[in-house]
Length: 402
Image (cartoon, rainbow, N blue to C red; front, top):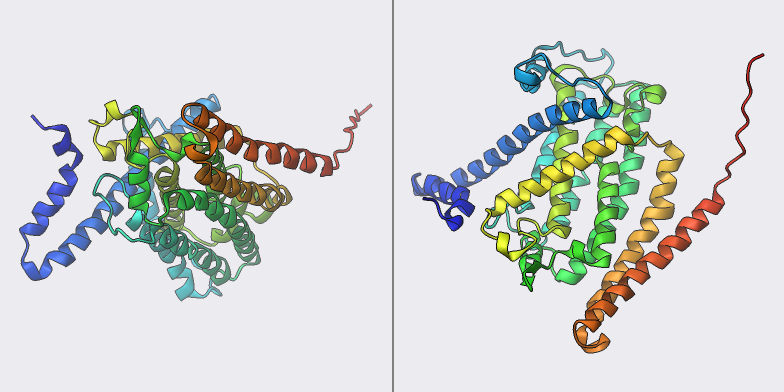
């Protein structure tokens, strides 16, 4: 019978066994290849599963059938889609820059996969344990804007270029609150290492884990982080780069076949990566919320949280309409940015309002929680009302044909 500790470290043990059975000069290379292959295979398979879950889920929300022809209940639809993408003709505009046009989707997918190197998907299951893991994640993910610009510019199409510039404006705008919302975690944890951030949250008091989402600044930071992540990954209701009624299909309008499939893959892989970082920063990473569930393998906890966030993305896509471009940009700079700065202030207050300052437990803990919540809630109400007053909403007039 497999013990809880053995199940938790089964993949680590398998990795060590495979490396140990290779020649000594090749062990480092084999270890790297195994880590890279595991990341690509696992998250590519998750991409295939997510596409069928999303199409089925949206079908249920919209009172229609999802895929139901290929395989039992349509579960083999991702395989059919993959075969179609591989066999479909690759059409490239005659006037396009063929080299850049070819490299753009490869750069986009490759850059996003690099971010997985610092995500701890389980205990002792991090490809690269960097002391500056959070900084590395944001630095590498910033290169996606370059790939988007490459795709739009190389197509030699004014609509694709317009779509690329609009996508870059959106991604840069929401990258700022995405990064700022994580600074509170770095302040409290005192480290940029994703591994150490998870270890800090894995500690328990009275059986409850110290997840940062259980704090006022952590809850607000997590909500802001996920909103910014939705915009950063071009998911609905922030999917303006694919505004068909305005710019046809955005920066990849001139792509077809497998190259188009790579852009489709990149969107989902980036969604998984940013969700994984949100889990690491706010939801305790691979740790369980309560100590008596610690027997469940750590990697199961990580992927359970990831699936929950994926279904949240699908739910939002099926229920919320697309924003206008001016609404998108105003929301980023006039609401998201100030709120992330306020969240940082609340995190600082949480850090310095120790029991020695506010009083003994449990009263001191309640006072600390209320003060930090007030630091966020009061500016939120003020800011929301100020923005509401600034909107010019004219009275709607209905006219009927006679």
